[in-house]
Image (cartoon, rainbow, N blue to C red; front, side):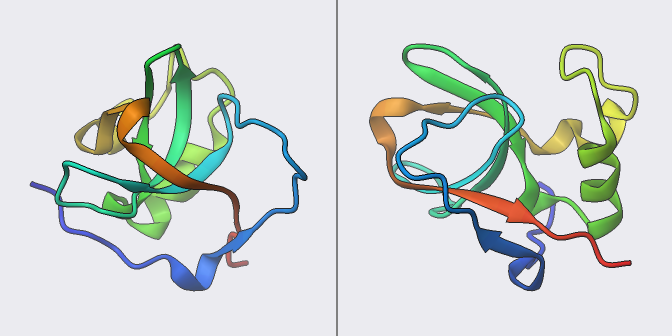
Length: 106
């Protein structure tokens, strides 16, 4: 099981005024039925009942930087860096969703 990493210094909420999240967005939400109650997820795919994505809480800052450089989420160049953080979430267990921005340190 990957170790959890604190990214609180690198994230901030984005003002999106009612916009639904889409693949490529980073979202934070409350999740029932998991050990990680507040996942921070880069959404890769959203269906009617589930979302698939990479839980950034289990990536180092370096790995997050690589993930954010990806341009094709169906064929990721560095998937081996974040495959252990890939998750599927049931939409009926998600609440309190916020779209977030990840700030890369220079």
